[in-house]
Length: 200
Image 1 (cartoon, rainbow, N blue to C red):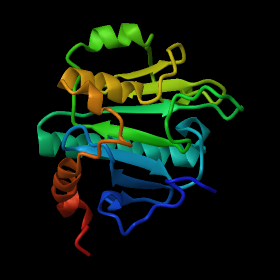
Image 2 (cartoon, one colour):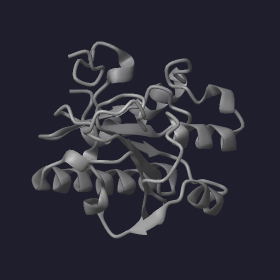
Image 3 (cartoon, rainbow, N blue to C red):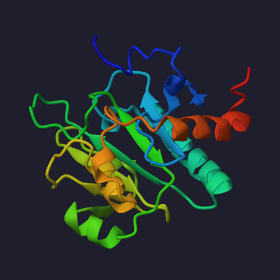
Image 4 (cartoon, rainbow, N blue to C red):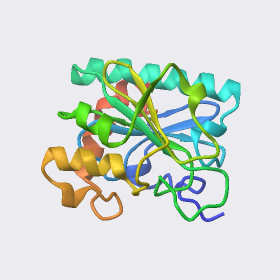
C-alpha cells in the first residue's frame, strides 16, 4: 500500500516518534506552521478517526487529553486540535490530503474563531461519537476544550492549515508538501523529549 503513514521512514528527523501507544503514533508535523505542531496517527490504515473501535477511541481521547495538558505546560496555553475526515465510500472529493487517519495538535488559537466557526458551519458536539463515516467532516477542538463538527464546508484540502497560515501572515506557505518548517520541527522534538524519553 502506497501510504506515507503506513510506511513511515523512521530514519528521517521529521518522523521522530514523540509518543507511541498500542494503536497510535505521535509525530511532529511536516509543515509545522508553528513550534508545537504534532500529529496523532492511527497505526491501522483508516480513512478517518470515525472508524475507530470503542477501545481505540478511548485511547485516542486519552492522547488528546494528555497533549492538551502538555501543550499548556510548555506553551502556557491550550492548543487547537482538528481532523479532516474523509468517508469510507468512494469519492473524488476528500477533506484531507493524506488518506490515513491523523489529527493535528497545534500550538495556536484562532484570532477570528467566531468567523471561522461560521465560515465552516461548525456545530458544537458533546463527544467524538458524532464523527461520521459516510461524509467528509472537520472535527475541531478549541483551546477551551469545546468540540465542534462540520459536514457542510467546501472540501478544500488543508483548509484548516490555510486558515492558520492566513492569520499568521504567510498564507502562501500553508502546504506541508512545499514548506516543512524544519526549525519548528526540531524545536518541537526538543520540547517533548523529556516527557517521552526520546533519548532512549
